[in-house]
Structure formats: structure tokens, C-alpha cells
Image (tube, rainbow, N blue to C red):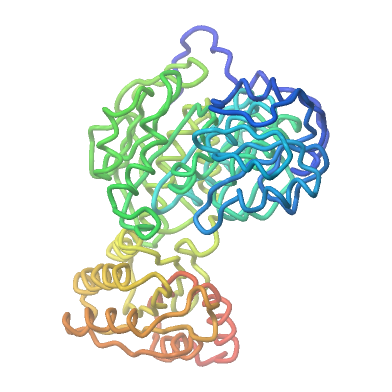
Length: 533
């Protein structure tokens, strides 16, 4: 299948980029030039001013201990602290002016009152760095499960095509060939704009980024001008931070609902929440599905017998790309190196995005055939007499798609080692347990191994007695026997001693299972020739 050319391709943002090429850190970006404060203030709503003055600022900061001489300090009201408390400290360190939500008259510095300091920071940061997202093709990806994998997969395809790429997400900030460890899934707006400016300076043309619900709710991506947005799935997660599931969905869906008329929205029709957004956006919609055949792209002839999918992508309806090409109906075969049913959905999203960016089918096929995936996302860590898979078993949606994959796979017996989720409360643990029960019944398994991973979690992820009790209560009611271990190595060791030739072990869990793969491989090395007896 080849695209039908619709005349000369339209000029995309990827061709309108600066070629300065200088490598800078985010801090250097903040202090690289003087800017007239009054010019910056034109980008926000100022309701009141205190000691207003004409001046130039050297940069912007929201962390008082990182303020440099002559910078504008923004007082951010956060979840656990209030930046207004630190204005005095920021001024002592050299802040020349401040953006506030309430004036502090005892502090002798120009202060500008705004209705929402987070929105103001996003707009000021974008203006300060020259609106960098306007100069690149911006791709925003959201989902409860699979944001990281989809973002990595998308970036890999775009790189294989020859684009110079940037990436932001849970694991890393990638600026061409430079990688910086991430602190947040989506950086604070000031840091985000600084990174985007560096990408522009390095000649990056395409940026793939994870967009979290928290980023939407706290206006971190307020001024990012997306060309393509993607919503893959939604399940119950982060309820504590959003209050209700409805609030969570509202925060997630803003990425789609607020997309512009010149952008594209990629939506998964097999997810009811993503599908509901088809009519809730001004963007041009490109849909996909496996169960649904109503979308623009469809997955058919799926083979998951080895755990690694082979399937056919069928273009059901013509659609136009960012560059103006028109893709006509047709089909092509895809083979994934990474395993899991969820990888099929993630790859369908990445394929849609890649095609919109003008990537050839051949490049898509070759990249997906060799793409190695992301750590702890249904990762095959051992394939010999028996197979061990490591998976970030976070929430019911994640559990459903992971365990549904096993229904397609060929193996003898299934052994589940589950790290109970700590410090998340009884609700998510009950829901996780109920999802596990549902699939254990379908997989005809009536026992599992669980652990508190007591020595392998920090105080922020310690499993409480209440969380253990609710998990065990659900299992007991369903008639599923649980072997509970305090320590992770003991739980994994139990599974290894049970496993026979052709069996499958699933190491499942979040923080409590993070070291699971290393522990399992270490135990296997000590077991040596006893494996698969």
C-alpha cells in the first residue's frame, strides 16, 4: 500500500525550525538573555500591580532556592506547599519581580497579581522561550496504561524514518541524542518550555511526549501547540489525586477536547472513554480498533500464540496526513518483537501517528519488528525450559489487558507472583484483586503467590495491613488460595520451585515488583541445572 499523492505536500511545522545547534542545560536556557518584563506581561492577565516598574529580567523561576539574580519569581500554589511563603527567600537570592495570586506588601519588590499562577507560568514560559512548540511537530499521548510504551514506539518509528526527534515522558527527556532522567511524567511548564527550546536549537523536528492527567489539571501543557494528540485507554487510577473517576476522565480528555482544528486526534474505538471523544473535539479524528471495525484503521488476523503479536493493519477509510498526502484503503502485515495484547493497541496508536507524520509503511514494519520495548511492560526476561514475564501490574485496566494476553498464548501451567500495591489504599487494592479473580477464573487457576515486598519498597510504598486484608478477603471469597510472603525473593523462589517445563511465570506488580526480574534471574543462576526439571 502506498499513499496517493494529493499534490505537493503542505509545509508542516517540522520544516520551520531554527538551526542554532547550541547545547544548553535548562538552567542555561533560563539565564541566556535579558527580556523586557513588560513585554512578557502582555501574555497574561494581570488584575493588580504592586510597585510596578519597567525592567528587564534574566530568567524565570518557581523554586526559591534556584533563583538567580534578576529573575522573575512565580509563586505557585501546590498540593503540599504555597510558593507565596518563599517569596522573601527568592528576593533575598536576587529575584527582581514576582507573579503572585495575592500581594505581600511587606516584601519590597514589584508584584503582579494573576488569577492563576500556574496558567501564568505556562504562558510566560512559552513567550520567554519564543513559543518553541510552534516550530516543531508536537505529538501528545495520554492513556491510563501504555503512555510510555506508545511514546517510545512512536519515537523509534520517527527516528527510523530519519527525523531528528525529541521525547518527554516518565523515564527520560530526550533531546536529539542527549538523554536526561525524568522527574515527572510531564515536566512543569517552565521546565517543559526550556526543554522544547533546547530541542528547537538542536534542530529537532518531531517531539513525542506523554501527557499525564496531573499535567492537564495543573496547566503544565497549557501553551503546547499539539499537531497530533492520542487517547488510547482509560481505567480507574489516580482517583485519590483527582477525587472522582469523572474528574480523572475530565483531566485526561482535555488533551483531546481542547485540540485545535488543524490538529489530528488518534482515538481507540475499543475503549469506551476514548471512543466517546470522537464527537468531542475540533481536531480531525483518526480512529483505530481491533474489536471494532468502524475505525479508520483496523487490526485483524491477530496471532498471539507465542505472546508476540503478528497481525494485519487494514486501512478501512481514506485519510489525509499532516503533510497533505492522502492514504487510501489497503493493508499490511505487522510483527511485534515486544509481547502482549496491550502492545497491539500501543502499536496501533503509534502506527496511526507515524502514518500521519508521513512515515512509509516499510519503515513502520521494520521498526516494530525490531523495537525492544520498555522495561517492565510485559517484558520477557527468561525463555528456556519455562518462561518468565515481568509486568507493571498497576490497575484493573492494566491487569485486564495483561491477563487477557495469556488467553492467546501457548503454555502448560501459569504461576502468578503478585506484589500487593502499597500506600494506595484499600479501594485500588480491592479493584485490583477483583480483576485478578476475574481472570484467574477464566484461566482456570485457583492459587497464586503474593508478597508485601517488605524489604524492597520505601516508606512511600509500604503495604499496610488494611491493604493486605482487603486483597486476601477478595481472594478468599472467590475461593483462590494465596501463599503470602513478607519478602519478594521468597515469593519468587516459591514460583521457581513450582515451575515445570513449558510453564509461564508472571512477575506482576508496581514498586514492590520493580526488583523482581533481577531477583528471579539471580535465583535461576543459583538453581542452575534444576530449572525445568
